[in-house]
Image (tube, rainbow, N blue to C red; front, side):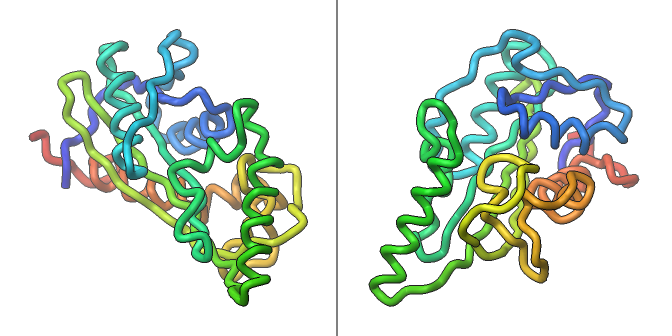
Length: 211
């Protein structure tokens, strides 16, 4: 077990409104006051990491250093099997400067159609989420969660955000864009990672290690 989280206030190091909503919903029951990086006027650092965890750590530590508070950052994306794990850590970049995920989903579908034309009809994918808590002294605790599923076309549902409308989790029929937020929170990659993180920092009812 990692360092115990005993603070009463936490910065969510994200400017993505969809992620902020989900993380606030997950943190809410813990009785911890949360404030977003945007509310504190913190800039978004350039994501130069080559893994989800590296980018999560980069964002969390930048926010913790500037705010003087522990910070929680998320780095997540869609890793498509037939596309060698792409778009992966570049999932947001596929949406372009306007962060238009209808464009990003179309790019994924076009790439899958090219693969299908060449004989590869695999439409499996995983949503991956890395979560990092960084304290102002630079200590980090990081975890990664993932959920497998298949990609559908055309996209379905107006809920969620990002690639949610084209992702159907394993064992289910509806996309993440069609289900309500409570159901999604129970099975999503972010929920899986959050459960791991709570255990690692002693917020799941067990006690963490203060070291």
